[in-house]
Length: 298
Image 1: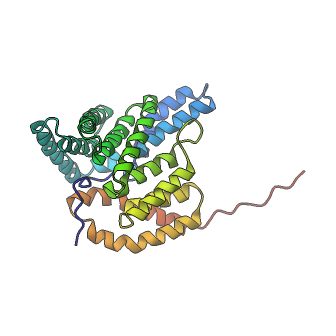
Image 2: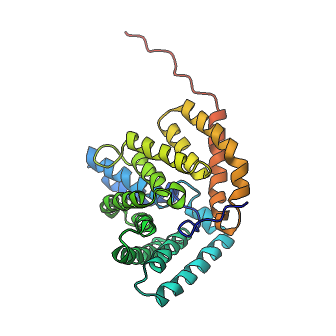
Image 3: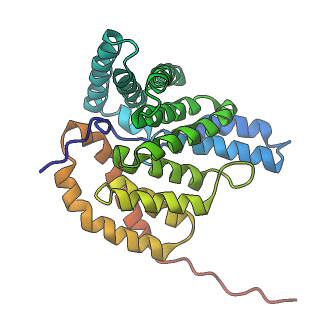
């Protein structure tokens, strides 16, 4: 039977785990300004800003790709309006608050400029903070607070750096409360955060990234995004054998995922998963580059 997402999982795809390409163009001007005076720490910070785009869903198709799909945008807008009505009808009710926060995140994926994205993210952050205040043990409230902080970070350039610790903390709280939420979402997002952030001057850690990404595929092996994030990590770390092994596993579950994750709620996810899957397969089909002859000593 097709999988119907649980109440805390019924949402459009994370763009992120997953949308660095548009954001990298945004930070290029700042990089030019800092290039003459950059220290190792400032370079690490500049790089981290670009990586923050991955946390807003980072790992899937870019915002431009989603914006080009009017049906997906309409679906997100309809969910947003419905969630907003419930939120306004039940002020102070934690579940309605985090559900509105989730809808804010989803609609922000279709924002055409930073003003729109920041406005939606700030609404989502406010709603989720209200939810965590009334239901401190709500995993979805902490999870979507972190996701909306990621959306806001995409609009802030260097000002986004102060949001990193908040995002890490909220994902960690969500993990402790419900590691299964959104198909192992806390582990997946923490893994991507530790994978893509610089080690020097930030939270980057290959060890922690590997731990969380591996845990995500253990908790939800039927969810393609978890495998894609792990395979991309293997490529980033130059681990071609590991990437090949995990890709074979993903190919094995792909037909079932195509059957199970169906309907409007999953259309956006497949719009991101398909091109990433094809790109990874193409990479593995390419021959390894020769190391070249050793240089002789003079």
